[in-house]
Image 1 (cartoon, one colour):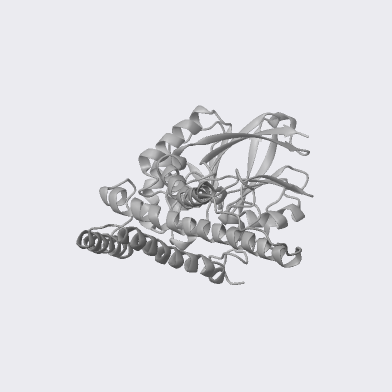
Image 2 (image 1 turned 45 degrees about the horizontal axis):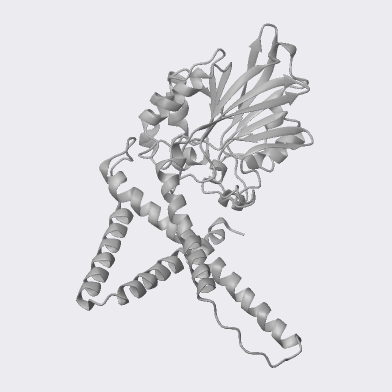
Amino acid sequence: MPFVFRFAPVLLVFLGGQLYFAWRLAQLLRRMNNRPLSVALAVGIAAAYFALFALNVSGSRGEPEPTHLTLRYALLVAPFLWWIFSSTLGFVAVILVWLVRSLAIAIRSGVRLVAPRKPVEPAPQSPARRQFLEAAGTMAVATPFVAGAYGLLWGRLNLQTTRQPIRLARLPRAFHGFRIAQLSDIHVGPFMSEEEIRKFVQITNELKPDLIVLTGDFVTWDAETAPAVVNALSGLRSGLGVFGSLGNHDAWAGAEDLLAELFGKAGVRILRQERTSISVGNESFNLMGVDFTNSRSMSVGGWHLSSRKLEGLENLMVPGAANILLSHNPESFDRAAELGVDLSLAGHTHGGQLALEFISPEIAPSRIVTPYVSGWFERPGGQLYVNRGIGTIAAPMRVGAPPEITVYELLRA
């Protein structure tokens, strides 16, 4: 199924949510005894809504995306995005509550049809029960709004440092205990400013890794933000250097060549269908990197490799050595494992960004794109770790998927 059609239901739910909450507001205003005041409030709220919508849709055309939080983004864009995503998820909750109630009514009706009919007095309706059900429904609808506010104000900055041991059979003895720090999905912009990135850089340096890797999506849509993100990340320090690969947003922004050039000048090597040897003494492992790999669910077009084929990757591998691959798209893992890549490090998914994995691991929007949403995975031939990244896209919120710096400790299997 084409990518756009997968998100058509989301658009329909969004439109349904806007109509539903407009109807709820109208119902609330009708309860007011002062009709002129209720009409004035309705007109004022509608005017504010459409004005906010128009200001956000028109945006700042022709102007580069800011790399620090401006008043416009803080006072106009952030509240608008909070409402859009929270109201959409709130409407999903409305649909679920309606389905549960409809199922309960259908079950009761079915029981009455098959049960022996006895003349019984109708049970009086319980006001307490009715109030409880109404309160439960209201809470279910209100939860996305509360969670959205949390994700905007706190969740997107609540960094988690994950320490992940990785056992590799072909790891040389000199690398037993070797530590690699990974950052991914920076998405420099108003909601991931240069100042904020420098905080993550400082935290990463304080972890004292032996090697640092960056796995793409440094920018979002604007290539002009590339110098800012490179400047912010240039402070990364490790014993054996900093290496990286590029992501889909870097390609969509047309910033791949520019990023590789700027990073190179800053002492960071971006591996673009390339390999390099990471050595300690006389022993080494093979580090490879590829640009974003096209898959059925997402493509950047052009000459980029296919996730299903990884054309030419076997030529970058070193037989008998431990081979580690930096690939932004975790969809490349299946083919990499077939080729015998010992460890793949990816990002791309943001861990779902707005995920409800505390309810179920399956509830994450990124599962529309890939089964490899976050964390560690293993297949015959290789292992994969998907980093949740530190930035956001679309909604500047994180719920159930905190930003992450991963520190891998390589161990001899």
